[in-house]
Image 1 (cartoon, rainbow, N blue to C red):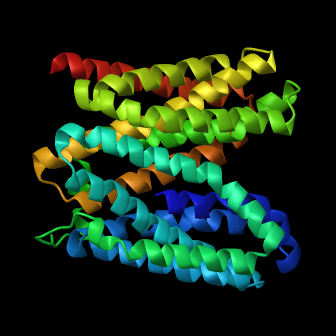
Image 2: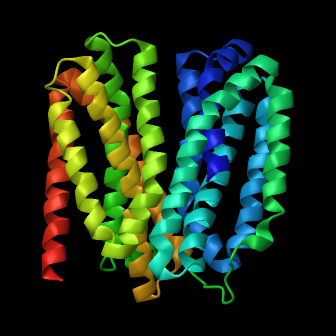
Image 3: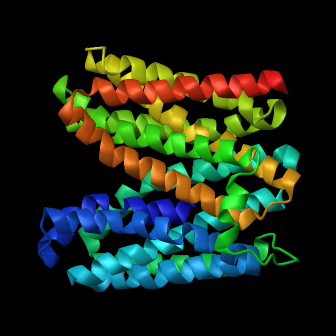
Length: 366
């Protein structure tokens, strides 16, 4: 998961480089950036099926081989079509990596400590997201070919540690036709919705919060600092959230994350000092980032109780995150242009409120 997010975010400082060497216009750059999440979205469910059939170790090898080869091609190629295709393949490898990370942990650690380890895993993913732009800056300085070649070697080395992973002893013959029945099972649908909502929250913040801060007078450096602060806070809190989830149940931490998200979306479009807005943006990004931990723990607990296939369930989880964040990123900007930024912010706040009430009702019913 650390490797995946490094590869995913490394492109950010390299966009001008690839635009220049490959003759990509704005549309081409958009396709290049979208290639990675597109690959993840396309592969999420098939990879889940593969995981259930061949286990964590073999899926890890597939993940690292895809990442290694595609990264090597991406580092040395200048052709736009090849770069975009390599980015899509990286995204497929990323889907494998996240399925191995989440389903492998869910199936390989005791249920009473699962939240803690999932929190550590998400903390590693956040660390990768913070390190990725620095990795890309080094590639821009020293050359994409040599630097990405070194990264390809590292990815291959990671695959050599597959023996450290817990693995299935009895493969499950699942298929994509089983998706609907698995997703409808009690509790799993709730966890999938919370995962999607976390993606929605991050998508809305990622598009509209920088624009709001810019309108209030914040510089690019200040805006970046706010998101970095949120990432650091998320990385620090994720293992703690996991431990609390283990002790009191996933729903306990879900409610607090949703309330923090509600507060963020309700106040960001109203407050005017950009320093105060920046605090709420950091709070919101932390709230939605850490929401993945109890949502994943909830899905894991229900999967255990129902003896559902881990790979397919976490393939669905990856898909719901990608759909939530991708659709919110695309739609929120258009809604803000057609109306005002308050409309998507308040709509997201409403989703947080309704979800918090439903989770609280379910807790009381139990």
